[in-house]
Every structure is written in C-alpha cells, then in structure tokens.
Image (cartoon, rainbow, N blue to C red; front, side, top):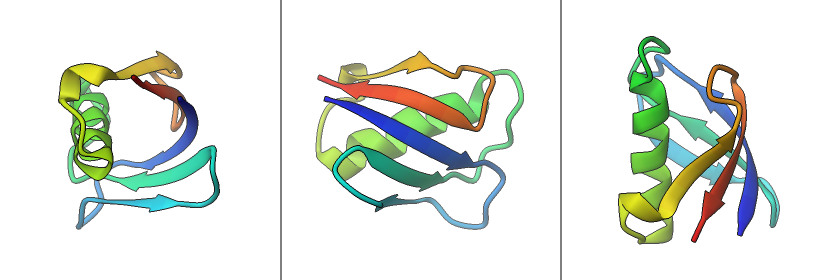
Length: 72
C-alpha cells in the first residue's frame, strides 16, 4: 500500500499520525541531512505498521518533506 507522508525532521519526539487511509504525518528526531531523516522515517513507519524495515520503501521525495512511501 502506498502512503503520502508529510515529514517533520528534527522534532523532539518520534511518532506517526494517520490522517486518513492514504495520508500520514511523521515526526522524527533525526535532522534532514545525508539521508538520516529518511532512514528514521522508514524505521518509525515500520514500527507503526509492525513490519520489518526492509518492507518500507521511499518511492518518491527522497529530498523533500512530502514523500510517497510504499509498505509491502
């Protein structure tokens, strides 16, 4: 399933808020440099859906706050 994700990097907490069936808001502690925030987003979403991190893929938006993520 694909999700449209809005990311807030450098937050004081890590959490996922499901807006509707296809949209998520994600807060991560990591800063948006050298892919650190992207890896944190994959980890937090994997924990939220109780899936292995390898089943969470950033399809689009590698360098953007707005991403499309696929959970296999």
